[in-house]
Image (cartoon, rainbow, N blue to C red; front, side, top):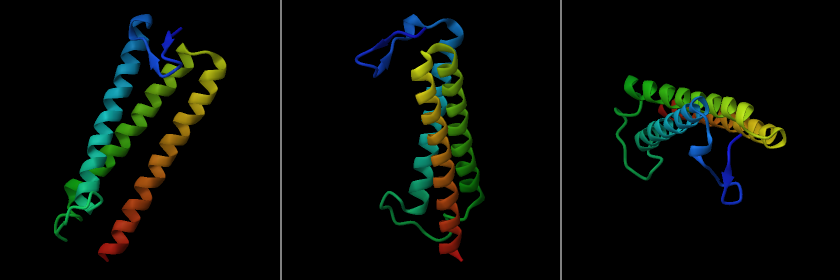
Length: 123
């Protein structure tokens, strides 16, 4: 059972066993990597207010960045789902499990809609 501090905002890593700690840290690492790659995507399509040239956006490297970003965020959602199923109370577990699934579906829809919008704008 994970020890939750600061009114539910933090999880004490010392209270976790080795397997749960590794899953939780892997979740954070994959989510951070996905967020970094999503920032690269936003910079490439001009989402951060940066002027971009037409040659940069349709590059195959950016397609790989987009796919990796989505993949990393889905892996992070799977790790947090695993962590929540095994280490939290049942009521908290169900709410957070649904939240993790909804967030992963939201990111999937956002990426797909941004990619389709990007294709439509280019053509």
